[in-house]
Image (tube, rainbow, N blue to C red; front, side, top):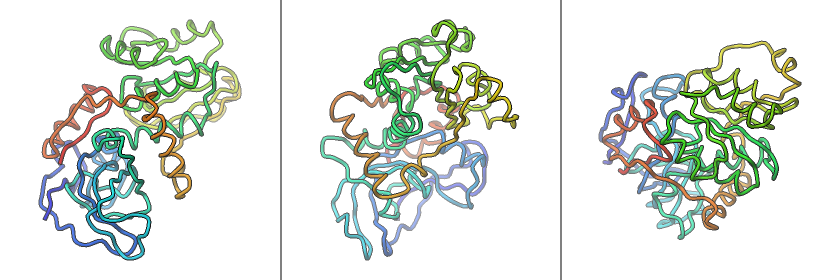
Length: 324
């Protein structure tokens, strides 16, 4: 038996139960992993609340790192004792051990710790596809990044700086502003005290930015469109404030023939080739020292309810991990 978090209904943090589960042996194409560290991400909240539906009862969590304890038939790329990490479905990372498909695993370099891997796989690979594939950021670009002091935000600030971009970031406090600035955010806007649309126009001398990366959703969506220059790209990849309300596509034309995309990590890592390339790019950035992964909160797995409450209350910065 192992301990894990299970949910049998949607709702607040209180619906997560810390229970004993039977893990069992891996089937064909599967492995059994003992987790050393588990990542906490806002997508976990979406599944817990039902914004993203899943069959219930079920687990939560899409990111972890640990050691392979058993392999099923047909698994040739991994062996017992391998250090591995992953990000993506199926849900169930909030556990001491789990059986899962080998196809979403990547081998973890010895130079990267389990804690760092659990803190960066989902967020780091998300930043990779956002900055290197969805809109390939290049030197001289000016980008707008919401939640610049969050886990994705701090990684994106550093990565965009390494690419030679000017980063405009939004945050909710002066403390978060200082944190984002230390990680490469060129201009930091506290949206609690400043109008971010007006400030972006001021910073860019009325031109607007080439791309907006927006994981906030409802509260920032229209304002984000207003920050773009003609033919700019709006990348909406999250709903922290709630889903975006329906709007007419003519809104894109009236603002200068804008582009809009709603990407997800799964589509960018759907093949083994894409997954390995995305992870390798992330690992290389970390190993080179160009990316520093900020783990600013650690919780015991049994205290995941508090972790979710703090995340939703915007009390966290950088990455958060759970220790089984």
